[in-house]
Length: 187
Image 1 (cartoon, rainbow, N blue to C red):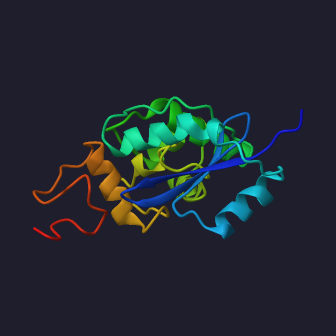
Image 2 (image 1 turned 60 degrees about the horizontal axis):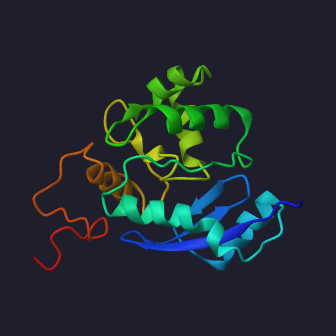
């Protein structure tokens, strides 16, 4: 049986997310559903694209529940084919050991992963994570602050996600239904 790639989308406070899944599991997540994102996923996986909406139902439901504040753990199969050995080891360690509401520093993740790579390299691994949110690179922070974030509109998305999870205290005007950077709008 030939493996295939299917796409699904879910509307969130961060916008319409594009999820790509093979028969093995989730292979990528993009913060924007665009023709370029779909083409990039198909090219990187080298798999034929099929229309298989039912395949993505569990992942899309899990993301809806996460953004509603009702899901604390993604228990979805992951297809690691778009990662190299070191990246896979680091991201697997993150996925399996850093729970909802917790953070870890870049250096701590490097140590915990057993890769021996420096904190700066861990930052590069996080920036190239093909499955953000589900493999929670937003939970990896600098030893002196939030650090960077390449998902969505950047560090404000990271701050919003960490606030959703309770890892950062919510400001008085924070609202689950408002996108990052729009707290207090309309109040």
